[in-house]
Amino acid sequence: MLTQAPKGTKDVLPKESYKWHYVEDAVRRICSEFGYSEVRTPTFEHTELILRGVGETTDIVQKEMYTFNDKAGRSITLKPEGTAPAVRAFIEHGLQFDTQPTKLYYITPVFRYENVQAGRLREHHQFGIEMFGSPSPSADAEVISLAMTFLGRLGLENLKVNINNIGCPECRKTYNEALKNYLKDNYEELCEVCKDRYERNPLRILDCKEKSCQRIVKDAPMITDYVCDNCKNHFEKLKHELEILNIPYEVDPYIVRGLDYYTQTVFEIITSSVKENLTICGGGRYNNLIAEIGGPDMPAVGFGLGLERLIMTLESKGIDIPKPQGTTLYIATIGDRAKDEATRIVFKLRNSGISAEKDLMDKSLKAQMKYANKIGARFVIVLGDDEIDNNKAKLKEMETGKEEEIILSDIENILRERI
Image 1 (tube, helix red, strand yellow):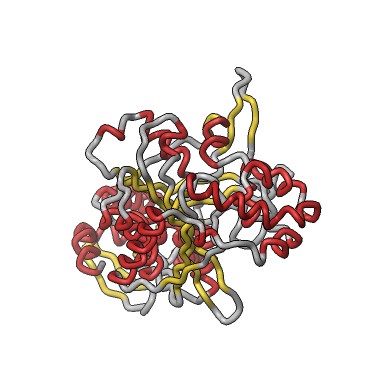
Image 2 (cartoon, rainbow, N blue to C red; image 1 turned 45 degrees about the horizontal axis):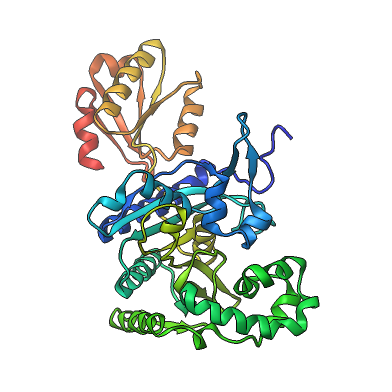
């Protein structure tokens, strides 16, 4: 077991890490363009924050959290999502006193004890954005448009936004009563978790993954029929904004999302194919979470997106992620003088921003050339006593096999002309 990663975790090896760099660079670029700045929060938080932020009736809290007591007996939880920690940081560091809105993004590991499947690991990584301070439907539309622009730039097609209006706490009271009246005749057929939710948060039953519960709620009342005028107007303005942006959307009255903090807008972005529809991004508005955690009464909206699932989707759709260029120059050496000179040249080139490598394993010349090819070196020179004495060497372009004689002391300028 010492040589195997724990179940539900995954090593990212060099042959794959460039894909992560590509996606993360795209994240930082789009967030900069939309005016979002990065926040980094700790890997673990106080358990009470997660309970109050995510919600005690969610699958995350009831089934999936990694929680433990530290040596001082404090209950600590590995963060299962990024929003509650970002809100905690927002409050703790007084960002609520800055000019609003505050626009943050993060790329962070999150931890959930769940069944392992493709694109869903117990430790996975999430790209999320949070906008604090704006109650406007324009903020909701901006968040959705950022996600759609980001995914489109990566090459994903057939993207569709499903949106829903789950109302505010006041209008949800009326809906909860209607939902409980609908469910009461089938109460005994609900799973044990949903029997608990029936009293504490019946809306959460709509998100249950148990087939028996899904069958029961199939014809449940729709929350959109119970929202108040304020929530209804907000939703209509959001739809208008999405139409201005030419973002196609559908209203799906059964989206509730898996977290208790959502209010009014919830949304999912789906990528469609012949085989399946895959939810690749989800989010919404959470107007009460900042106050619930201990901050001021401020609205907020955001989304989360799993990077493992995103990269898996890009690969499955045959979207090319460009590989980085290999080492610019490999210096193969013959003899001790050449090794010393190669050390000096490589250090100088690296210092000037040109990638360079030399032999570190006392390989034969043939093995050195083989290694240069393996690491994708664009150019190779073979350095021996004659080359050092004459200040000349043959520069070989590996892709074409073309060779040219160069002045060794001018190698930096020569390489700059070719890269």
